[in-house]
Image (cartoon, rainbow, N blue to C red; front, top):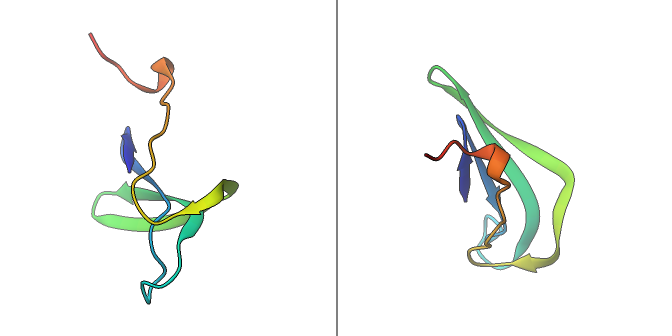
Length: 65
């Protein structure tokens, strides 16, 4: 999971019943207290993952001193 601005990107994990690995990417966007998960299709992992996935975040996505 990676935070970019006011959004969180989530990739991989388990299915609802905990039996299948996932390859989908989702974005959590919030406006005030109204939050929604959106699919980022067609972005997805080529191999499904059950656990954490590391992502390279481009420098222009963050503001570090």
